[in-house]
Image 1: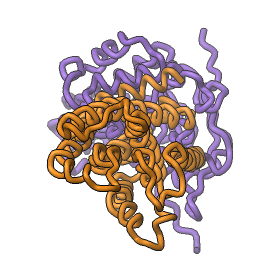
Image 2: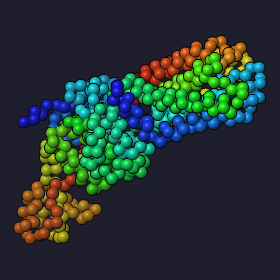
Image 3: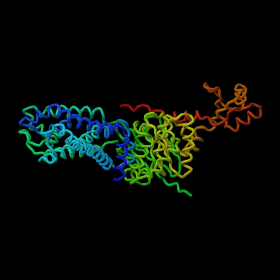
Image 4: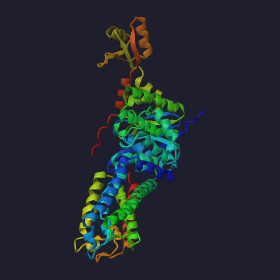
Length: 247
Length: 306
């Protein structure tokens, strides 16, 4: 297993696309967070339903596009270039191959997202000035941890989908519109709100909030739990498919 | 002192895709320390067989074992088996060295093997370049380097001749012979049958997924090229007359004017030419007749009534 992990690490880190997507994530999350706070932060802070977590981490939704692209390149990308044959000849145990690939992808996203979350919080609150919060503010540490875990678990979901679909364009065409547009919009449809919050990214977004909204039928920790369940289900499906399919 | 026990054992191997039978009840052994050519036209089932040997495709029926075990049960497979699948199996965005580095890491192989195999296939200078800019021949060499990374006793090479120029093919031939001389077992597939057959000790010929021949090369040559000789000379008409008088059948090769002789062997042709003072520029087994023999052997069977 160590050897398989090392192999996946070398594979992921020797591709320029890995670093470019991770850089895009940092720029999107921190940049958009600072931009939003700088432009509407003060006004928002005066609103009664102001949620410092949601505003500071407003860029997460955009960062997720980078996470999706990275996850799909690491998984379906192997099928696009048939390197998956080489990979499975080197590591013929499919469960081991999948576990190593998911672990390396998750670690890369977790490391990047954790640093980005802390940096984004510090930058946005510095820009916000007086109404700003800090990690000492009740709930803010939890929201910041969630801002690292949420993209990581979403990456696991997307990597599993990449393995399932074995097609880069198909996986991107499904995941980007779904998580970037459809899912956030569903949350705005009155009749569907309470169901939509159970979608992977919406459940994760709940964990980044400091205050629950009326439609949130579960708390922040449960939100991460629901996202983790999605990830577990997607991984189980990917594992099942990978084991029974011809490579 | 080697015992020629079977390293690769294929038993009743079958692969069906819906109603299409890609591999049909294939049974053969590949003995240790030999180069075995696995020949057949495109689509004959060669690649599918190799993919099942490597655990990539699941057989519909039968077994394929290497060293008595299924490939997926090998703990460090690259140390046991080296495989060349197709030249595109390296990521274009990665350098040749990084491609070999991750492969080495996957089987806990020492880093110095990466340099060793790059030198071996002549890619030392190109090691730091991205595979995207490689020619087909360079990709083939990189694939062969990857196959040799674990210094494996068994090699499975799928169409290694593809994309190689004449010089590359000659290099590969010598290389395969060298591998066998080191006691390695090599199974090499190709649709360029005559091209690869001459490198091999043993031939396996498949057509429509079925085994058509399983013979040592000398026996195959004896059966299909005896008395079929190719002669080059500056006096073709004169030699033709002499050979006809000696009882041979003679035709002219349309491409280069060489004579293709049947009915007498090369020694007899040489003797006739020498006796009459006809200088020869070429004398040898008619390889094209070998190609003809393969094409005849693997001719698509008439479609069974659906």
